[in-house]
Image (cartoon, rainbow, N blue to C red; front, side):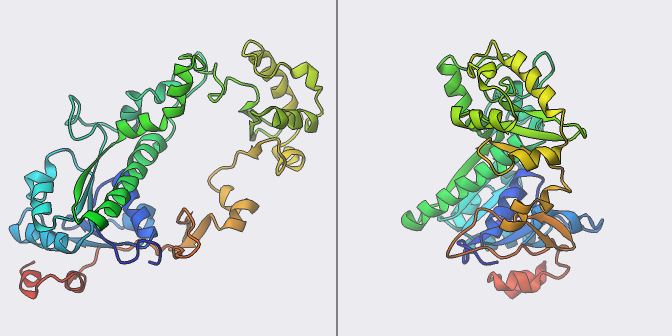
Length: 371
């Protein structure tokens, strides 16, 4: 892969969700990422559809054998970073913890991805995205008034507050190591990341501008000018006209009297104005509203499903989605002007005979034969 990380080498201990997302981003940006999986992995063929494993080579090594552990430590000697997503203590137990790895390569960046973090009362408990964002305050804030919180897929914990956070940490530590020659351990916890993503809301709360009651706030669907509306055909549109001049344009293009929708920022009027706006949007189909509002300063967009999104003209113009491996997938992001990323390579099965891969990383022939 081409990209700004060309020349960097990363070891990824195969796991689920956020750590592979970090590995994908690093590989998308040009790093050579080798994935270490357990023996027998990939036989079910599920790898064909695992977009998170794209752009990388996967090899199977038996880490229950000392030769397998030694092989990974040899790879560590040649690597800039290692990322893993196991529970705290697992890597230490198999002989690949930070102390063992940094002893082989003092400049190594050791990235650790967990839900609860490497320490704390919950650090060894099982959990998933929803559990991690629950204790950050983020889950409580998402949803409609008088209804339970809404599960926001696993975007907030696994990927935004998890894999993305780990990626930023690994990149920052590699940048620092390039100057100091010293590696370090990155403790990326989804609980921390979900809390960090909520920084603006905690700021609003400190200023007395955010209620703990869902559906009463500026950005949680409480405001009539920042919400999703149903159209005549049962499809949806998203409206986010916060600034007064954008709000004015929304009302004008919808054929509404602005005076009847003022004052805009009085929360007491929001429920009533939302009902009025909902009645307006039900008078036309989604496509008809696109003709009127899309591309204007009314802060409008159609709500597209997974099939529609890749076909939207804006996404097509930016190549936001690409075809690879016979199916559509998101393109690498962000975009780099001088060192752009390649079109992602399709996911591949674990390499049956990894001798060439291990040799290219400088492992000795006798160790390769022992494996």
